[in-house]
Every structure is written in structure tokens, then in C-alpha cells.
Length: 302
Length: 329
Image 1 (cartoon, helix red, strand yellow):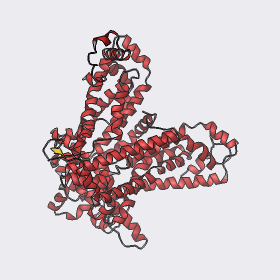
Image 2 (cartoon, one colour):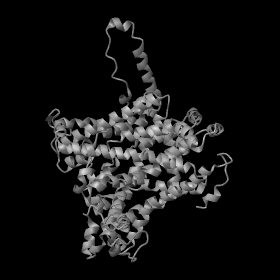
Image 3 (cartoon, chains in turn yellow, green):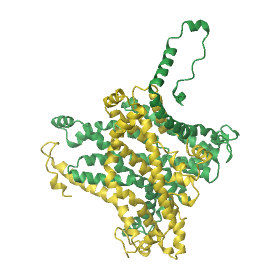
Image 4 (cartoon, chains in turn red, blue):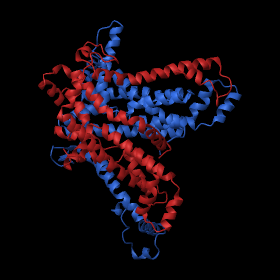
């Protein structure tokens, strides 16, 4: 908001701003502040609700300031064993899935990045086509079940192992590496695996970090595959726990009933949202710029 | 393994007369494949597992779509029991619910396209005019944030915001209205869906445009200014053409996902009361498949949806290539 005065130093856009443009800039700033407020409001609202007493929430008195400060719902959720089991599942699924995805994506992207490779066009096509046409829900379901992956971690991890978008981002990055290094290594007697492991990967830390983030976030956030393929509650990730909570049929709900604290429904939901979002919000400031550069890399055109 | 990479099987042995004078092209091609394999086999070997992944988990389900033409029994063969031809397709063409969900898909798809495509461009243009670096970065960071949330969390937030004691109703009451059960009313579903979609995607969508904006040649602005162009005209004649390839690419991609409107979010947000406006092809398919166990029927619907999606992308891409020269491939 100090910006009105701060930004007076014109650099690139000519010496004099017309009056109309100055007005525009003020309006622009206001609009952007509006965007910030609208974006942040739901977050603040949820946090406030999670810390409030249920009665105030039902009365519609909680906006962004907690009313009747109350941590019962936090305690209730913290003591729900199923919540922690599901939370742990999410962590395990995310780690395993990300590992597999990174290995597969790196291998394929590296192969695709070799312009002189015979059959490369075909290999690219195989991946690209799946972006525009897919088998659909039912055939996928039938396949995964008949492979016996139901109620196993593999149903979550394997069928989504490669994201074509990520693949293209990584391919673009590998293509931008100088080929001389690899040629020199080949002359020195390194084979392809050696070149990939000892030359290319050490140079690709940035892109691998980006890919880890992309995959980890998408696996952390996913719910539908687990919802579809898992019918044992102790196998579910926390996202499905939350889904069941908002659909009005899950353990914390019954835990609430057991504990004779039935009133806590709305607060409980808010608390679950807060706790599920927390890890993302915690790492977000640190990883944000990687995401941005990763997307831009992808934009270089696959 | 590597055989998947070879062109069609080796040519059958030729008649002796021909063998004397081999066709010029095919042997050379074959030999060069052999050479490529000998030279690059290590590289090819890296592609085997990913290729298997694509074949099994992407292409096999495509083939699996033939259960749309066959009678499927749960627990039976994944390709169904016997042929029934177009029976399931005729079934949904005669199904009034199908046409209702088809219309809903078109409406929600169009609304999403109408808002979620242009708004990132507007936001990127506005951000581009900000000179205070810190403020710009702050707005960007905040606007990307919702992109990282799980759909479940977004849905849960929407439910909290629109609940009777939620923020939306506080606003309604502020203006003297009575609380509305937003998620129970078909009339509100589209608004809720589209606005939450905008909330979640708009900031993320600006990234590519902001990247594209930085590549525009500053001399063009200089030239335009010398020609007496106002800011608005500079935007119109320099900025917008400058980001047109990005715009077209994203437009084509958006059109490609037109039919697959936010399946997961709708599944989380809708309920039988809002079916009249909220139920879309994919959610109907989901219910048909998993609640009514009518797998073949659901597969037929899914195939229809996927084919329309494919046609849309191909058409959009073709039009784009013909008119502005931008194309996805």
C-alpha cells in the first residue's frame, strides 16, 4: 500500500504518466488488494471457526476472529486414532508414490530428450496421446481390480505413476543441458546409465526438486483413487477421512458422539481442514518459487 | 522388450526373383533399426518400464472400452461376456437423465471456460502494471495458494462458507435477507461451482501469462509510444498479440477438458437436491457404474464423453493452426 509513492520511479515505461494512467494505477492497486482479501478470506474464516465455540458458529457470528475460544475440537481430533492412521497413510502413500513417479519420469524423459534416437517420435506420441484420450473411469476400475490391487497401496501409487505434463517439463529441461558434457563422458568410457547417474542427474537437482514437489503435492492431495479402491477405513488417506467427515459418515463424528460432544460437528470439520492443510501451508513459502519456475519450464514447449 | 520399438514385424521372405534385386528402402531401414538398437540399447532399456506403464495403465483401459459394446458381469472377464452391439449407446440416447446431465455438462463447461480462461489473462495484465516488486510478488504468492489445496479441502471450505452460519449467510443477513441453504438449492450450484473454481485456479493460471509477458520486446512499446499510442492501445496492439500463442495453447487445452468438468468437486459438493443443475456426465457415469453396478452402460457413457473431448481438442487445434498458426503439436 506504500506502493503509490514507492513506485513513482519510472524506469521502462517512459517519463510521463498521463493522468488517466495514474488513476488506473490506483484502481489497479485496489483491485489487487481485493484479490488478496478474497483469496485469503476462506483460510482465515476456517481458522477462526476451528478455534471457536460451536454455538457461535451456528449463530453465524464467526468471520475471521474466533469467538468463545475453544480447543475442544482440536483435542477431540487429536485423540482420534483413525485420524492419525489416515494421516500416516497419506505420508506413506505420498513418499512411495513420489519415489516411483520420479524414477519412471526421469528415465522416460531422459530417453525422450535424445534428439537423434530412432523411434523417439513414436515414444513421445505414446505419452502425448494419453493427454487427450483416456480409457475412462470404468475400464480403469475394472483393470485395477482385476490386477488385484484393490485395498493395496499400489492402486493409489501405480496407475498414476507418470504425469505427462511433468514428463514434458523434464524432457524440456534435459534438452536444455549442454550435450558436450555427455559426449565427453562417453569418450571417457561411461555408458548410458553412468552418464545419466553421474553426469546428468547431478546437473538436474533443480528440476528433480520441482518434480518431487509437483508429484508430492498431487499425491498428498489426491482422494478419489483411494476412495474408489479402498474400502477398509484404516487404509484411507486423510483426504478421504475429511471427505467422509463432510459427507457426514465417519469416525470423528462417531467419536464425537461417543464422547458426548455431539455439538462439535462444524468445529470438527474446520479443525480437520486446518490440520490437513497445515503441511502444505507450512512448506508453501519455501517451495513456491520452484513450482513457478517448473511451470515456466514446461511452458518452453514440450 | 525392445521389440515394441521395432517397426512392424520383419518383412516376410521374398520370392527368389525379387531377392536378387532387393527393394531399395526396406532393408536399409531395417538395418538402421538394428544399428540403432545395437548402439542405443541402454537408452531404450530405460524406456521399457515407463512404456509398460503406458501400455498397461493407459492403453489397456482404452481397449477395455470394448466392454461398452459387450455385456459385462462383475467379477467376469474385463472385456465382458458377449457382444451386444450399440445397445448401451441406444440406451443412453433414450435416457432422459442422460440428456439432463449432458446439458448440465455443457452449461458448466461453458461457464467454466467463460470465467476460468480470461480471468487469469486479466489478472496477469493487471499484475504486469504493478511496479512495486514486493507488492507484486505478494499478490502472486497469495493468488497461487489455493492451487495447492486438495479438492476435498476446497469442497469442505465451500461447505463451511455456504453453511447456514457461514460467511456467505452473514453477508446475506447483513443486507437484511434470510439465511439460504446454498448447497441445497439447484439455483445456486452453478454460481458456487464456478466461483470456487475461479478462486482455486485464477492465480496459478497467471504464471504462464506473466512468463509470456516478460518475453515481449520492450522496443515495441517504444515504437508504439512514438506512434502516439495510449496505454490502452499499447496493451491492445502490443501486449495482447505478444501473449497470443500462450493464450491459444491454453484455450485449446481448456477446450480439451471442457467435457470433463470438475468431476471430483461436483461429486463432493452435489446432493440429490441439486442434481437438476449439478449432475454432469461423469458423475452420472460414476453413479451408474458404482451404485447401480451397470458397468457396461457406464463405460459406454464414458467412451462417448472421451470421444467428444478428443474431437473438441482436435478441432480447436486445427482451427487454431489455420487461423493464428498456434498448435499443440
